Image (cartoon, rainbow, N blue to C red; front, side, top):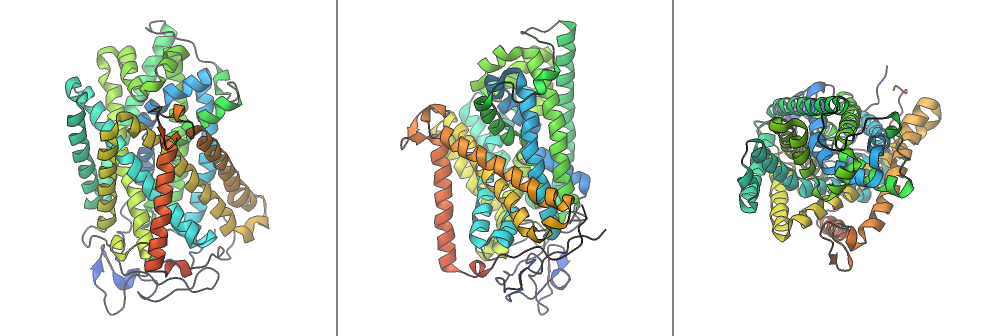
Length: 538
């Protein structure tokens, strides 16, 4: 079946000149070029696009579908995400937590489908940035790219902190785990190590991620199996309740509770698109990364629902609701309750989950910055690629440095401030996911009436996913405006800390965008277009 043809403005490869065929990133400039550096290429609607910045190419065919799938799964940090949301989720919806995890899957699947089809037309490592620029224009595209970059800055330090804390608990070093200074130093060192692995090579990163995802899933399966067995055997130490099919009803707890639960669910699923950010480094880049993203959400659905059933059944709603403020620490307590002396199994699952996600969360932010620099939306220096390894070294270290500074500053303010910065993350996630769904429908608008397949998969599905996320975005803004709903429970400028953090980052993005536009307006001369005409193929 015919595939969607890439638009002519694929600037990621248009970086070398015939006069300078030096090898960068493992490929020659002439082999990777789609045009001549410094010249403009026509966009999808025939207008002149901005000239591409000189840069090398990412290493092609570095990983396969299964590698991308493992990276997509690890980027969501399943064990850590479950540990972080299960207590607050049960406090909101009770035994219907598995149903809310099921409902949260719907917008994620719809947006994952949008990622798949947009990647077919434009396999660009900048994903949302590139696609939204082509469909909706450069200003909206820049803001989408900024949101992706900032998610990495907000979450990398927290993930590394959790990996350090649970790793120390898993080996019995409880005293060190409780020492804030030791954890901070080890966290910074871990961030640097994971960044070094990212720069060292995509293949090495993929092999490391494959080991971690297997270890993480195995530990979760063992924990869930033992918990369910003890429920039916009647040997549990908490208020166990046998699972029921009615738990899959997400509406059982009522509308307001469902809204809050869906917000938590969206956070739990976030991250699978890291597989698509590696599109230029994946075999069969037009199809494999998008399929890996979709299958990541499906595997996550099975994992989340199964573990949610096991946790709620073993611990009961009262215990979990009482642990809502403990966030990921609830799994440390449950590990001892369920596994006894073997509690290190679950502690290791959370540690490896956060460790893997520390590395994979750097990928979208660094690749997005690279893509933005190639289009002149950021300074050319961000487009530098390591000549020997074919990885975006400059953008990776910039993301690392910014994330490290953010972590140290916020951590010094308080642990609650760190939690508030994670809460602000949900606003950025909902924003750029919603933009991607809208961009899909707009980009493919000429194909939507060709049959039920294009209408549903290219238009109605992505728009429905975007509408759900926009609704959640509005609801979360209203919720975060109340300081009492923040982890710190203190007002920043009369608002909740998470909302202030999100507004600060959004404002900083607008200011930087205007400064960049004043310094170099080339990117802002691009004009939105439409998908090239091609036969439909699902």
